[in-house]
Image (cartoon, rainbow, N blue to C red):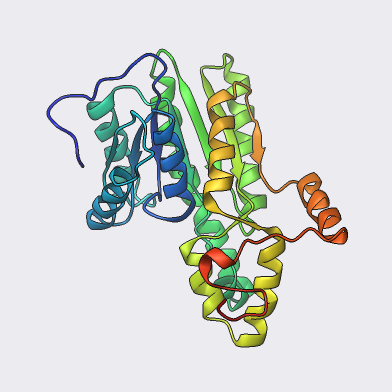
Length: 280
C-alpha cells in the first residue's frame, strides 16, 4: 500500500481521489494527473502485485507533486471489495473527495470486433451492473460525509448508452433528494492510445491493422493529453450531472479541417508505428 502509520497529512485544498482500474491505461493516467496537482490518490486493480507495481511507477515519476499514492486490490464486481476499498481510503487519508469509477470493461478494437451481438450485450450488461453495485456504495459513503464529494462514471463507446442512462437515473435521484453535496457526472476520454488498445491493434491482420492505425491517427490521443485535460475539469466542476467529454464533434471538425489544409498529426511514431500498419 505504501503508507506509514496513521493518515498522510493533507494541506488545504488537497483532495482524496479513488480511481478503480487504475494500474494501467487511462486510470493510471488519471492517477498521474491528480498526483501532479498535489492530490492524494488511491489506485486499485485485480491483484495486489499489479497495484504495487503501479505505485512503484507512480513514485518513480519525476514530476509527481506533493500527492501521495497508495493502493489496494479490488474487484469492482464484488460489493464487499468495493466497501473494503472505501474503508481503506478513509482509514489512510480521511474523507473521500472524488471517486472515479472506470466502468467500461467491454474493450475495443479486435476484442469487440470478434464478439457476437449476444456476447457484446452480455458484456455491456455486466458493465452496467458493476457500475450500479459500486455506485450505490459510493453514493452512500459520500452522502454520509459532511462535505459530500464527487462520483464520476467513465463511459466508453461500447457502454455509452447503458451507462449514460444509469448515470442519468442517479442524477435525477440526487436532484430529487435535494442539495448538491454529492455530485455525479460522466467522463468520456475518446480514443486514447493505451497498452490494451495497442495490443489489440498489433494482433490484427496486416490489412486490418493498417486501417485501424489510419483511423487511430485521426481520432486518437495520448493518454496524458486527455487525462490532464479531464482532471482539470473534474477539479473545477461544481454542476450536477455534468458530462466531461474530450472527443467532441467540434474537436473532430477542427481535425478534419486541419487535415484538409495539410496539417499532419504525428501520433503514432512514439509507439514505433505508422499508418501503413508497420513499424516506423
